[in-house]
Length: 123
Image (tube, rainbow, N blue to C red; front, side, top):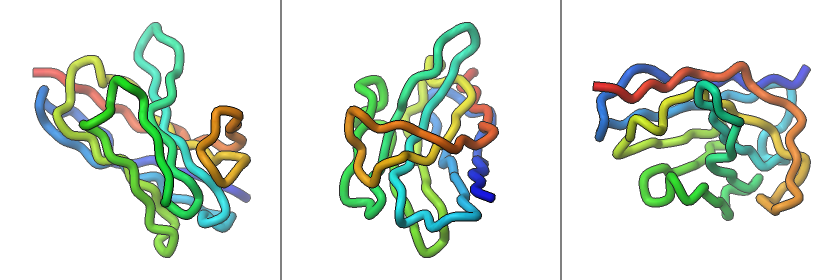
């Protein structure tokens, strides 16, 4: 059974950092692009970042460019999201999801989702 499990969330002060992990099981991570999404209270879910199956390509939402870095270690079946210079507006539940295609293309769709990890940025 394909499964994704996020971890690494928590409470951090503005300007701080967190690294989220997305651990995959039940499938070969190297065959899939992975996306990170977030949902703030009362808001729609939004895409944060995507990384291609090989790790050679990635993209970011404008709101996180220059602050967040996505990476992956296919040997460890894990995708990471390094979040620096965190702002209160980064608060939300962060989810990782498995893409249907290997590349991060506009037509990308996601079939398996993790349960999410809470990130709270507050002083």
